[in-house]
Length: 392
Ligand code: GDP
Image (cartoon, rainbow, N blue to C red; front, side, top):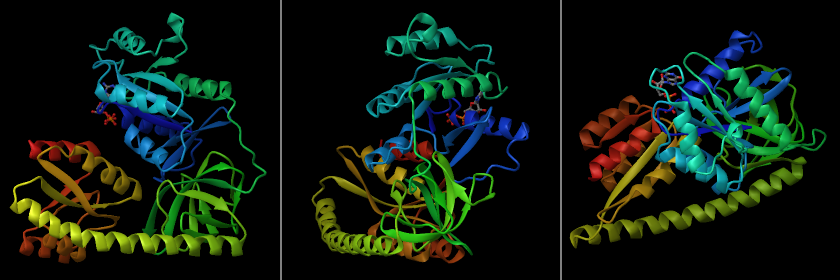
């Protein structure tokens, strides 16, 4: 299971797309890739699974929740640009997680590409290329021209083999929730990465504070599956609620699953009550702070299309706070911007960030009346750049 990381614009998304397209072109896919949080590519009868959300933020968010989904990191470095700040961050995040790194030196089709320079820079940072006697595999690729992609996949499989990663297909299934949402018509849907055991339709399970019975399983091409073995991303139908990204998934007998879900939901309710009581106090305090000219707080409401983005933004934005301005997430959830969101923002003087979602008609009208700003976005980095600009 691979996560692609690297500096912005070095080609993470392009590389993921190119690898998937190659698969479709090779006729093995049997359809168009569906976005289910991860997709698998088969290479000579073996499978490599790619996590859809590239970057170390998503990777580390999962880790912070105690979930380890990535076995191997592909670090994309633009040969035209070289090692950049987020390249170094990605290296640190992968190293902290003790996950091996394979380097994809990308954009070698560009005339100004300097792959040797990239290797030198990486060697200086402790990633010594194999060809120079080190142990880091580096493959020169072009996502645009689809150069050397089979070699990259081959190297991924080789490194995986050396790590002797194993799972037991006979065990009851367990894994991690990658994404979740409510689908109109199908109800709560979660993408689960099965990490051990085999998941079958009809299995009872618990994930986070939600339990359910597998009603249907779909793969990353939208095909129905009867069962899913280790390292398989599957869309699961039959949940009683919406779990969170990073939640642990475990097959259990019905009574046990219900019991654990009840217990965890009680805990969650307590925590939510405690938070909302606290929020009112903080709002009063905020007023005082602003009057006395202390630190200014910028309250933010986040709405996004998938739980993963909600969590990435919720974690990233407060970190942009500085001495003068504190960013505070007052609400963050999956779905379109609603009237309730606008009212909340209006009452708190908040800005709404709409990530890959739109306000519905009524909400848009209300926002205009109430002078609430809704900022649409579809690229995580653009959100942070915009806020940084506004703060300076
Ligand atoms: P990300 O931010 O790391 O996901 O980068 P993107 O995949 O969005 O790519 C950034 C830009 O680089 C886009 O304009 C791509 O078309 C371009 N790009 C990506 N891979 C290549 C490549 O192999 N060769 C060239 N010439 N351009 C590339």
